[in-house]
Image: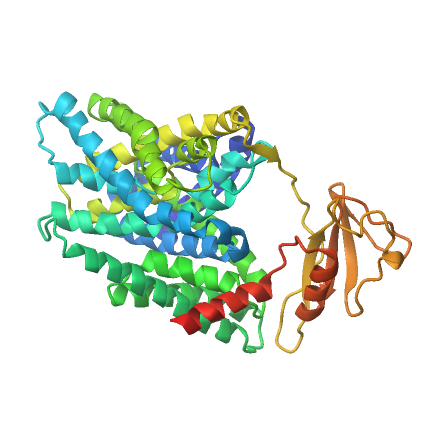
Length: 517
């Protein structure tokens, strides 16, 4: 019992270290993910041997924990993906998330093998081309959390369609990297060989994984629209859906990562009971998973292992190959013929931060017993840190230099929330008053809003004011409005044509997609 309590305390210390590191990360302009890793490394270095994760945890256990954590992180990312925002860049975003990941892995794997032949061939161990392709597959996807911790931490935002493109790519490219990793592990361990027969297998995992995510997402919406008596049961239902979706997809040999992300997208673009509560709950779960996962992974690494010549020299060269050759070449090919300018493509190339997924995926070779997998793990860890330190510190200066930034307005959270529940068909939505809005400069009494809608609060200058008939609406205000979906659509049609309120439109899109299938 004493040993269990000691481990519980150790987990608590890891979580506390991860949370506290967030404050330091914002001060020194470093993504919080790196601070989580640093906190874990500090615990691993200065913690007693009694708490040594390396001595206590087997690669299979770490891999299982990391996989489950990624399921919840991806589901939370899917919930926050709004179809209207990504629709204009959907084709190019998905191309980057699939073909872009494949091209990055191919270019980086080839570069890594050349580096090995030139600089490390005389080492005591032998590494073939397939081994380097596996390493490249592990780090072929980008990380949304690390990327936007930098982009939004400087009080600016990216202009045009850059931000939704990067959000879509970062949220949806982890499944492709996981798929490549699984295939390459089979190749390296001799269970499979390079063959065109793998193409239908890959297509099957992607298609069936997408289908499983859509199906579980729609089923989840149906279940959430039932009454269960206790609010807490809705959050239990949310956890159950993630586990069922991932487990069912993997059971039929589909891609579980892709399935849970698609499931999250479906549920994030439909109406059901306690949706906003589910989104907040899963955001907390995702943060819990990230803090626990990456502080734990950090504790597995000893800094001196990253500074050995066997890791340091090829690690620096591989990082440079990824940042300056592999990623830019993949982006250039995937965005050929698109509306994005050369300056925008340059920034997209440089904004490909590595973070969560590569370190989690690096536990897969450990669990599978791949030759020299500890060395591979150290290399991935080194490259992730290098990407965050180099690209993370220079993304915003480059964006400003290229003229691709616009002001980022931090929005205060409304102190009033309304859950959608069965039998109460009302929604609470905030509409922004822009210079083009006909309401700018008039009072609420003069506005003559449609009957059936009510302005409950007005966000202004970072605060909130209670509305009255004589309250004058100003440019830049945010009107927190309550009404039925039909009434809010009427409001959008007459006063806010550029609003992001499109829930019913998104619902129809998903219904049309299902009908087409």
